[in-house]
Length: 107
Image (cartoon, rainbow, N blue to C red; front, side, top):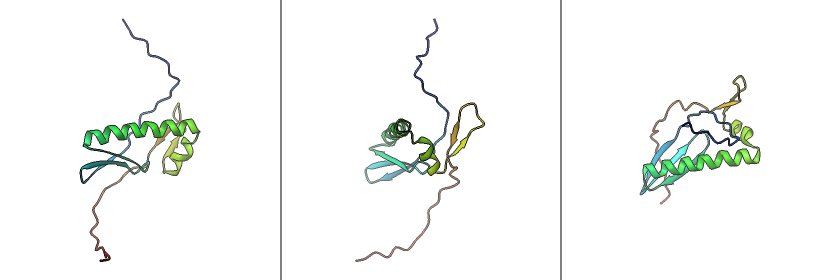
């Protein structure tokens, strides 16, 4: 017997969002440079789950306020209007590096 999917009125589009995980003392920080969005957790998995929840809230609130297009554009996302439904593509993260610097710290 087939289950019928409940209609929610939501349009979805697949998207891959880069997330960087950083260990800070006893916490793990999850950060996405393409949305300047971050959260944390006591473990990698908790930080990942918290980020997924923050991401969901971020998109729901932008849609609710009618600011999604403006916000994504401000973060450098590109809107593809040639698709059946408008699709957004985040900027490509092309690398990650560590830079050595000499810090002058006041004593």
